[in-house]
Length: 130
Length: 146
Image (cartoon, rainbow over all chains, first blue to last red; front, side, top):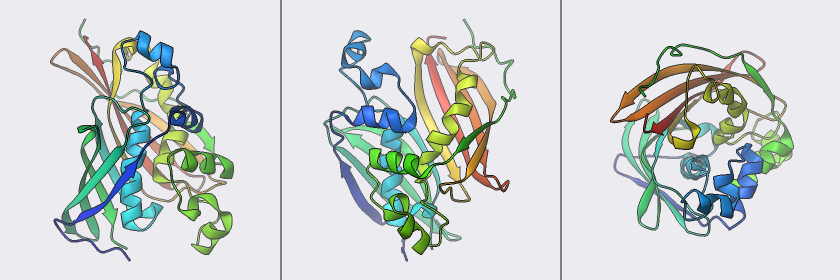
């Protein structure tokens, strides 16, 4: 059983997507936008290279919550804003802090950072306390 | 060119997505999930599920086919070259397991303009074959230079 207290920091999640991750995620999610899977196309539209799918990064934020909450059904709500862009082969760090505990729900403020900038920010999760 | 708001409230025909065991495994592996309830039917059954469970963010997989018609609707008028995914919210209720059939309905929740940017908000409601709501999603797409 997961226990939460206000002000508690949940375990950090660190992941470094490999150079082919965007291709696997495109296949798994169905989002084949070439900015994610074609290096030449991405650079031709002014990007530094293939960029991560925002929803992949959101999935890392979700994983940090379900790992802390004890399984898939613990995550009741997740709201994020995407900023900038995530890149393959660079570490993503997800940090999470409990801001309130009430009525069986822990509210968590969370973010995903890469190279010192937040690529998911102002994110809020609700975790059911089992 | 200002945004046009006539499509607010418009809905699109529901899509149905059949959730498969191998698709859940493929998705779970791509996002780095290692919890055996996503991967191993025996572990899922031991945890009380009928089959492997979808990670919460698998909602993307069963909802995306329902969102696409709204994104491409000329009445909504999104300029794709200038679009970024600005924000996303999901609210989950009943779990999704392999074998479920998930129906999703999309509605244009809001279209607005602030600071030269268009904000296009779509709401998706997904229910399973028993009529239970499994997930409500809100997709915010931002278009620069409207």
